[in-house]
Image: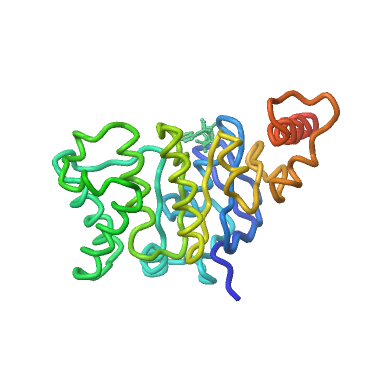
Length: 251
Ligand SMILES: Nc1ncnc2c1ncn2[C@@H]1O[C@H](COP(=O)(O)OP(=O)(O)OP(=O)(O)O)[C@@H](O)[C@H]1O
């Protein structure tokens, strides 16, 4: 079986600054959480996996195929939904037009795209806002619009950068339910600072520290990584803080 994501010795950075170094990972199926402090490299990794940033060196394979040329990248993008931390949109597009446009970019055929756009908009509870212009949506609604376009049209891989920022508690619960439904058909990778979000939905967690995976395992295993006296309000937070501390000591 070909994994949704495989990287081999992936190195990524900006200018002379390496952010990710020699990362070899395989991700396939389920909901996978990327946790890490500010500046750890979560966004950089997600943008690389989303084919926005070409690797500086090493390889990324999506769905078993390496991304060697433009044709490979275009083919992979058809099966890939991506919510960037900040996404652009035409302010005068309605929500429906925005999601339709994203599906068009993914080359989903017209008739299917109409239904897929409305299904995704309904899935984020914005059915009554489908005709509202993007510029008139609230911050939380915009986030949900971004989630809608990322999951629309039956993608096989969904990459979400901080998807729960700006969502109210009820919408965060709704988001978790949506992720569980979407994960029946797709691999989901999401980054977050909110430990409770990943605890509630993720099958596996990767803690990124200094551009490397400092911990990979289940939420229960991260809880088990907590050292005596670690700070944190929950067991998971104590595990997470312990892993980060350990990374800093080793760095
Ligand atoms: N376009 C860029 N040009 C130069 N440096 C960048 C650029 N984008 C990110 N960086 C740097 O790369 C490092 C990793 O940033 P990245 O945004 O990937 O981290 P992150 O884990 O997503 O952080 P956060 O949780 O704050 O969003 C940081 O030191 C950041 O300053």
